Image (cartoon, rainbow, N blue to C red; front, side):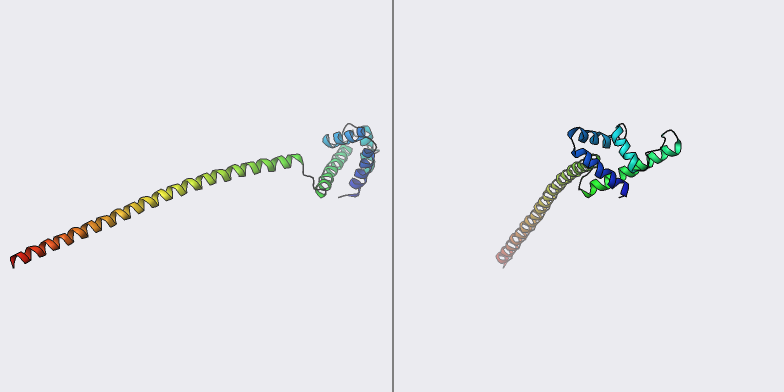
Length: 158
């Protein structure tokens, strides 16, 4: 963070501590990109070296825009140090979380459906194997009966 930001921010916080009205103005200052509030504007210009600049000249407009950009960057860094997340970033993460939660629920549903299909298929395969075993047993029994009958037939001939 640059020295100008810290100096400006410290003085703004001191002013904000003087009364609720100044706190509201600080909030508006941050939300409106440092425009519209003469006292804060003057303080901003002083700490960023713009106090005697003429806003009508293009070079000074560029200096103003650079100072505002530097201020916003430093403010984000400062708030990041304090653990504050910008609302837009928070809402973006909440939306991402909700989408991932929905995707996970859909995947869980798909997994459950696939498990049911696999169980049904396993049961069908189990039924087929049991049917095959029953068929082999039945054929074995019939073959045994045939051999017994054939043996009985041969004994009666002898």
